[in-house]
Structure formats: C-alpha cells, structure tokens
Image 1 (spheres, rainbow, N blue to C red):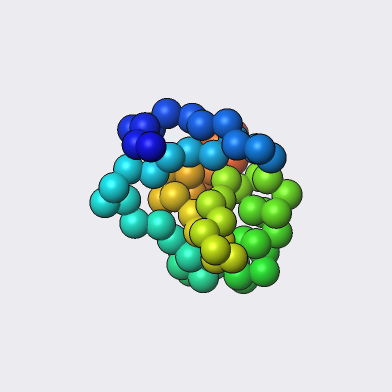
Image 2 (image 1 turned 90 degrees about the vertical axis):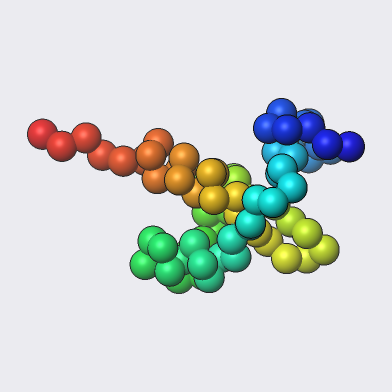
Length: 78
C-alpha cells in the first residue's frame, strides 16, 4: 500500500507512510543534530513526544518529523 503523505491509523497509534526515497534517521543521527544522547532521543520517542517508526526492532525517525518537533518546541524570544 502506498499513500503519499497520508496518515494511516495502526493498531496502537497513528503512523505515517513514508514515500519511497525518504531517508530515515537513527536515534544517534538525531542526537548528533540536537546534541542529545541516544537514550534521550529514545525516551522522547517512547513517550510519544517525538514521532518514530519501528522497523523489525530498529527505531527510525522521519527527518520531517524531527524538523517539525524542533519548530513546534521553539521558544519565542522576548
């Protein structure tokens, strides 16, 4: 099934279908971008705060979700 950018409801939570050609990021790669540990990235994913994709035991992150998370959590300056 290929849905381009549509939300698909799974058994436990909503997941996004990734378009062919998108490169998913590992927790280590997200951690390097944000200067956070892998365990902190996994904790954000586990809590549901940072959307993630689980593929045969490996947790991966859509770069668009990573960018959206930062944009949504940016503090406004005074």
